Each structure stands twice: as C-alpha cells, then as structure tokens.
Length: 100
Image (cartoon, rainbow, N blue to C red; front, side, top):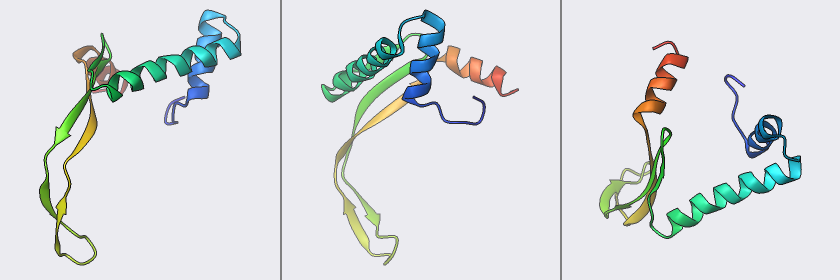
C-alpha cells in the first residue's frame, strides 16, 4: 500500500480481512462511518477521533485576492472550509514510519 492512495474499497477490504465480516457488511460499515462524519461536519460539529485527529469546520472571512489570469483584484467571498489537525500520536506515528 506504500505510495498508493487508500480508497473506500481498500478500507472495506481491510475491515473484511481483519474482522471477518462479509464484504457487503464491511462496505456498509465503512459507508455509514463516513456518512456519520460528514453529517456531523454538515451540522457544524467538530469530529474528534482520539489518536487520529480532529476534523473541524471553520469560517473564512471575505478578503481581496487577485485573478491569476488578469492580475486584477477580485473579492473572495466568505466561506466555510473543513480543516484537519492530526493528533500528536498520529504525527509521531507518521514521523517514525517515514524515518523522521
């Protein structure tokens, strides 16, 4: 799996191999988990997964930017964005795995 992208199908297969549920049950489990995270974020909630990290919706204020093609100033509308902050445990794990 190194260097590749982890997909929903990969998650389902990993759950299937580790837990022993049917592939269909694993797919439902993964989908429901991701739906719950998305629903919480849609409601403006923070999603904290201990040992993994925190997903949080943040408000960005309006600001002036530039049109990259013309260089003209352009207003960037206020918007909501999703941020992720890895836990210290996850940061340390990744640092060890990548030889840091």
